[in-house]
Image (cartoon, rainbow, N blue to C red; front, top):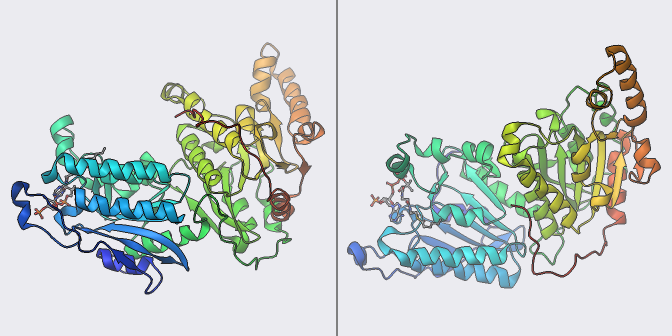
Length: 481
Ligand code: HXC
């Protein structure tokens, strides 16, 4: 694949099924006469909009042409975007924006600002009704970042696209910080540090193919289910490769993706935000041909402890899946919330509450598998039975307790000798380092062997596929933010 920046028509041609693109409003021109703008009236005004198909399913699209006045947003091209947003919402079809824009057109003043307001309001009204996907395919500033931020997924092209509220020149003027576009808001910055970006691609083609793939996992709207693929992978397939994944020593890490991948159809897992908050893994896979959303602690990173970024990442993904009827599978190996002054002061209480809220509010089928540690508050929030999971499974290696043995003994028996404490640790481990206490109480529905994970989860999802649950009527909840 080449790394050439494509023009907007080339991008749309790649994005949509061959010959399916229908352009709208290509004769629209702006009406601004400030700063000699009457001499810069170009057909389409730097935005291309319309509709087409991805794998035979209708999607609405718009994209900016950076070569026309820096892809800036005018009142006229804002109207074009708002028109396809309205059509997408009315038609119950996803909307995809290909952004490459310097933000509000400076020459138009408040006219261009109102254009963004129109777009933002539609982003919000479409939220949870139709999937909204934003690709960032060039430098994007101001409103051209905030509209994507209101959508469900942001994709960026590495070393070609940037996002910032204000560019490097303004940053220098206001804070005297030196930065360039890439260090301020490049793809890797947003994929690994800010968490703004969900997926990074190497070039335009790759980015567009990723959008097509993402759309394939999603329903067209909140009243539909995601497309069902023929289940060509045996639903009863045993996964003996899982027998050795969880180390016998509870202090050793392992890669939770070695559990997720083998249980997915064709062993394929489409990870979202792979570079951000690596202590939690989220993404889509298919089981028995149907889309599933996975939320899993990652023992390989910070021992899987839940911190602020992990909470934000997981909560938003859970919320997305619930909006769009995608069943959730939580895979749990978590020693707790990450302790520390910084975490407390930055608000781990407020952020951690988001996962509780999202799991508890979700009415889609919810299955939990505990592979090893399920300690403390993290046990509760990772889709425990009382938070509302439909099926709770555990491996024989699961440990369900308020905390690990050492920590518990150091609190309860701190005055005892080291020898006595050793004995207490053993006693505690015998009592709690297993899933049987929880299973005895019915909080774990079944204890399964790792090799049976795929079939056990598929059966559980099948059993609750037609689950019908609604939350109490309300305008909307007051989720922690
Ligand atoms: C009009 C613009 C423009 C804009 C760029 N251009 N942004 N014209 N309105 N917002 C024009 C440039 O003048 C230039 O024209 C051409 O587009 C290419 O821009 P360059 O600066 O040469 O490109 P580059 O070096 O790649 O830098 C891209 C950029 C920078 C980082 C985006 O142009 C920039 O900082 N632009 C302003 C960003 C901004 O502050 N926008 C308003 C945000 S407020 P010529 O004729 O020279 O080729 C906003 C309101 C909503 O959006 C806020 C919501 C929170």
